[in-house]
Each structure stands twice: as structure tokens, then as C-alpha cells.
Image 1 (cartoon, rainbow, N blue to C red):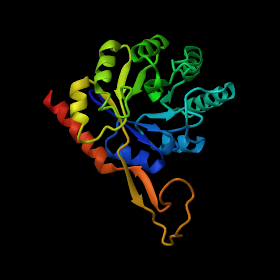
Image 2 (image 1 turned 135 degrees about the vertical axis):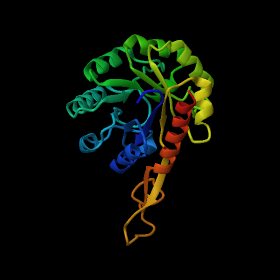
Image 3 (image 1 turned 180 degrees about the vertical axis):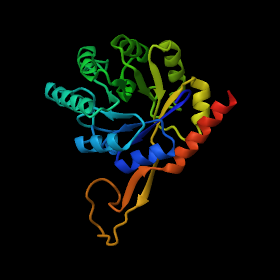
Length: 251
């Protein structure tokens, strides 16, 4: 779609289908929302790719925590990239840093070469680097297609001044896509101020489980309940779509 692009972060098949039906232009498919996203399973990639008609980007992150990986973890990432390529995935989302917090160009170059012809997004590991403009230059030199960033703040709205600066410095050599904490109340101001044309949302919601029997006082993990399913909320995505379409109509 020309103009503004909505990418929705999805953690399950239901969310991916919902995002497509509600007007998303692309999804980012991940596992483990509470760790900020990790690589989804082969089965999840395959089924989502088969059922969606919009582009599917996949997170390549072998674990939560920092973005300094051991050599064995690089091997995991390479296998996951190859797997995504074989499934016809449209793009991968990844990021690798050095101990000093700067982008690791040697490893990134190897991963990017392996990922071709899939598109490559460098994710919010960027927001943990010491110098955003230096990091942007590194990504442009590497030939990365897209940068997902919150402007080195917890939310993209708080980091909007840095995002504005990054978009100007990028000079259309790389797409700078704001993400994190974008909602219906701040998206128009964020886009107006930054000049961004793509943005990344979660539109997080939930629905009750269809289980009839509920076992009380037993938790399987950190979620407050096994009987509430986290999904992308269709009405939120539809509202985002309507807001973006209103900008298109005003052009």
C-alpha cells in the first residue's frame, strides 16, 4: 500500500489473522511477548505464512535479554534465517551488538547476506546503542532496509525528537519506523512531528478463554491467568487504519 504503512506485532496465529482482517499492511511475527519478542517456531512461521496474504516479517532473536550473543547463538540465528527463507517469509527482524553497545557490523553483514533476498529490519537493539547517529550510519552502510526504533526512549512518543532527527539524517537511504507505545491518542501527533511513513504497533488486547472448567490458584508462567488469551485487538487496529486513512484523504 502506498503512503502510510501499519506493521502489527503478532504473537500467535489468531492475532496475525485479526491484524490482516483489521487493515494491517504487514505483520511482525514473534514469540514471547514478555521478553520483548523472540523467534517463533517453524510451525508458527509456516502456518501464518500460508494463511496470510500480507507480508510477514519474522523476529530472529534466540533468547530474551541483551543483544550480545555467543558464537553458538549466532549459529541458531543463521539456522532460523535459513528456515524463514525456505518458508518464503518476506523479511527478518534482528539486531546484534558488541560489548561496548555499538552495532556489530561483522556479524550483521554475515546475517544480512544470508537473509537476502528477504528484507532486513534492525530492531530496537538500536535503542541500546550509545550514539544513535553513528548507529544509523552503520546500518545504512550495511544495507539494512529498515530501522525499528523508539528514539532511544521507552516509548516512541517520548523519543520523537530523536526519531525526527534520524529520519532527516537517513535521507531516504533507510526507512526509519517508530515503534513502542504508539496508540490511538498519540499516533497522529507522532507522524506529524517526525514525518515517518511506517510505524509499528502492538494494539494489545485479550479475550477470555473458551475453557468451561477453570483450575484456580495454579499458574503455568508469569501470565496472571491461563484463562485470558493475549491477542491483537481488532478494533484498535481498525481505529489506527481509519486515522491513517484520514491523513491520506487530506493530502
